Length: 238
Image 1: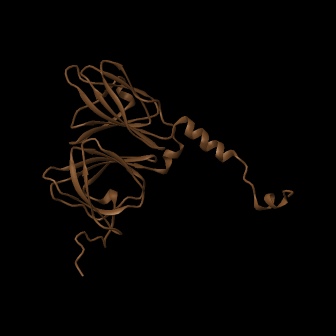
Image 2: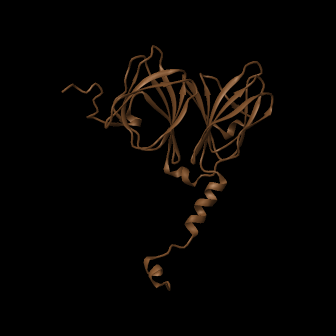
Image 3: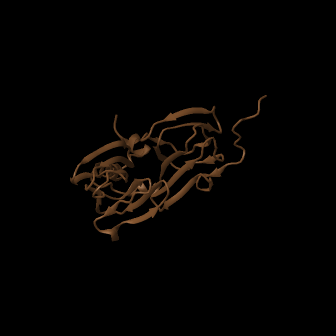
């Protein structure tokens, strides 16, 4: 019997795993920046919630689940995927460069939030591309030319990669935290203008949170519908 190359007897929560740096915890969402150095591996850790991962830079890893066979996975810069809750695994970086990703956990409170309107360019030039659309979250890639403004609506997490700073038109509305991989802003349920530098283009990843107005209305309609009991069915005439 061969020894398990990725032992998982001792499991830690994802927030206690040293390569996962939690930056934005609240009732609705938790945001992590993940960095795994070349040929390093994580502790065996547990993801208790559904989560979205956005990969920064090309990467190749091994994901070794506790209850399954290790898988070698190759990612390209900008890949984005949703993973279900419950995963327990070890991750090993196979490349000579760091494995970096942005990880957004989808907390139960997101079920009650209404997602804002889609982002759009209001001045300057660039592209706005939807790269993931799920019931509780949509992810957008904003490629902003120099001197460009994008209108964005919260609740959302706005991520400017590689220490570059997105400045809202009204700074008091947005909380900003700095990190060596990215700078992260929490946008509440309001409108914000993201403005690029006069002489540099920007790359921004926008995680819009909550359900659309139509999805919330459908959920409420189902909740308001009366439930038929077994006796009600039995009393119906044949």
